[in-house]
Image (cartoon, rainbow, N blue to C red; front, top):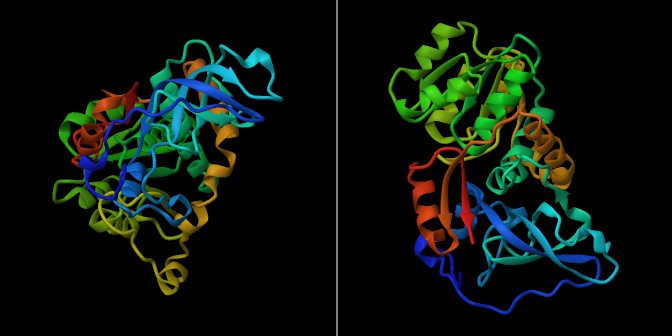
Length: 316
């Protein structure tokens, strides 16, 4: 893309194949993950640590096969199925990444699922590490149908948490229940806060909020006194601001963008963990839609309009 703007700024172009340098490998991409962060960066509204200046190639999480190696790289890597974050952009047929950042994709895990786990799975595990859940605690996940949210539902349920999933649209209720949520509410309908309050009169012990805006503020209000609130996304508007007085009076522990900015530092380690869980049948990534690479603009538009559930994937 040559400029910031709407989905239409995403244009497919032919360029020379990248060449791996010292310590790098060339990956033939099988699947590339699309995230809401990608759409924010495209609009010029991405987080500071992911700021980009056009022209640039968007995206990051890719899976594929090592097709070439640079100097100083183990030749045994050639032909291996891997996942990695492409610093130069993942919406491409071929990318170059440092060999040290490769994560081997286990047998039985498809390329689309691996792309989802590299990005959304590592994020979900990181959120849970920063805001641990104790067995028996009620946990509200908002939204529970998105890529990170659907994986959080499963990880929290596996940890013994009692999950209330908040989704947009009744068509997603059964899907989220199947992932491990005990209850599902529709946060697009009036009265959803009252539904949660009726289920947990004292409020959930933990809220994971990936929406922000009006729904995020309502979710923050629901947190039980002494509970934990984690804000990891702003798809519906700015993250709610909980002032020091409110945090102290309600004895809340809050985790926000400032505390989560370094989640990317341990992506390979977390990706290995969630990929192993998926290979063992203990974690199921929800790949909601797949698009040809040439339709990246449509993928962004559908994601922003709420037409997709789970992780969105591009196929070169």
